[in-house]
Length: 185
Image (cartoon, rainbow, N blue to C red):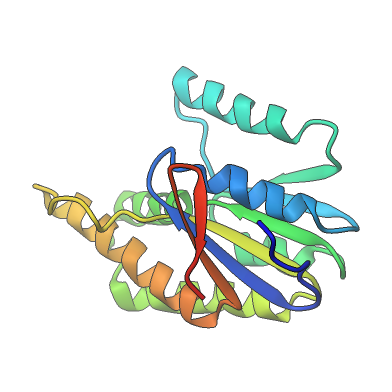
């Protein structure tokens, strides 16, 4: 973590597997910034175990100058509403995509890769237009076995498309494994 502090209009993507340390790395990176900090949480609280996970993430931000916004469906709007100079941490894209996929299925629709690309581009546009640093956390879900069911395969494909779109627009991309960050770009 010897990177220089990021200035205006920086987009940083942090990816890695489950429990790789990506969220902790992203938070530490953001906390090196001066000025206000905004945490955009995309995780729905679906059960007690998830509530416990959310509580632990919230505790990690306690007394560190974070404002938290819960935004499960429209993180680009939350970015657009943030003040200039705010360092934004969006955690995470994989849960955002989960929420979009679930909502589309509730409506009897299928979230396509083309729609995902459009949504990811709009999110990246919001980040690139923000006068401050935006750090997005995502999961690397495509390195395992091919899922056995169509919904899981669709989710994996949507996450892959989103990650590629955001990474193409990012100023820096980090891969975190075993708590160690490797700068890819």
